[in-house]
Image (cartoon, rainbow, N blue to C red; front, side, top):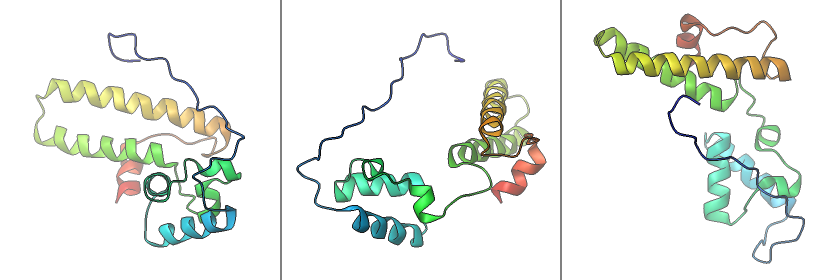
Length: 144
């Protein structure tokens, strides 16, 4: 969106209804694995990566599951937005130390614009309160 290039067209993974031959786990075992990984302190994206790479489970949605619903890891803000907010807070700390870094200043503007756009979307879909607004003070409290 913010670059001079056209970018790659994104697409969704096709839903595969066939049973993969290498998949040796059933739904109950996958739920137990997700809960075990959640107790170890892994985030939902880390749980998905571990299940894919170490256990050969391509996607938990194949079983009709969602990681955040099974593990109960619902946070104040969604994980992707939390990561953006954490980056913005770190970039603000950098800007306090080096005021003349114009490239970082521009990057911070783009990052905060992305956070606001994503916040509008999540407020519209009900994952955030309707009156949710991004502010640096709230972001610093959230990241701590």
